[in-house]
Length: 266
Image (cartoon, rainbow, N blue to C red; front, side):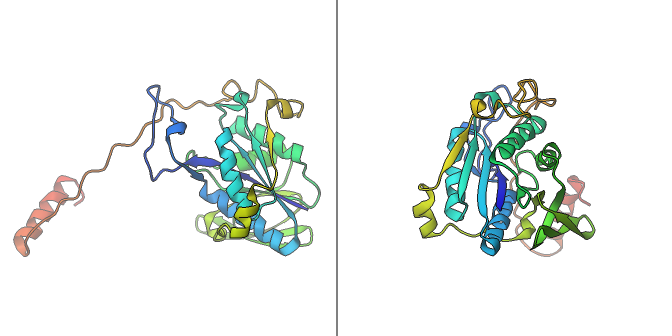
């Protein structure tokens, strides 16, 4: 049995958002982190490994430096990493990205008792489209917004979050689950895990490695194969500073009321 986890390295939005003159993000100048929802997916896979002894494989599409993120996930307990990286894949939107990642997952192999995990959505796009698209392209049943997962044989019982509650669903393997942060609390890297992280394999899937996969078509991958394009990226303007009001009593209250009225708060 395998648990295959799709993860993404995203810009750290708590830092500076670097934007090039042409309006695109300059990712090389931005600090990066592992997408939050994806960490919940990794932890779900590791918990399944604790329960069943399955192999955990983490798959990411990105530039070569993303291997460092995969090594961190190996230090958490994953068994193998796959980095999907090639110039031909650059500029992919969600449609093209799901084509490429689905091809990579298919090359890894999805057996009858396997589970594919994804995060609900990435913080740099917030589309929540890639996971469900991967499921459709691999012809896998899917459950999204998973907040609890229980395994019983070849069946998973999943608590799926809704806007005003939740629903309980049962799905048979092989299947794809997208995870929300409320699902769990990701574990830290262990000292033993850190020591062994660079002894574990990380395979590189470039264009040559995937070009024979049925889902890889030059017309449906990369910037050329992306139906949507980002018109412009920009760093939001800084918020205004705080205003301190000195004193007490009716005069200060009146001054505060005037300020709120000017900003149409009251």
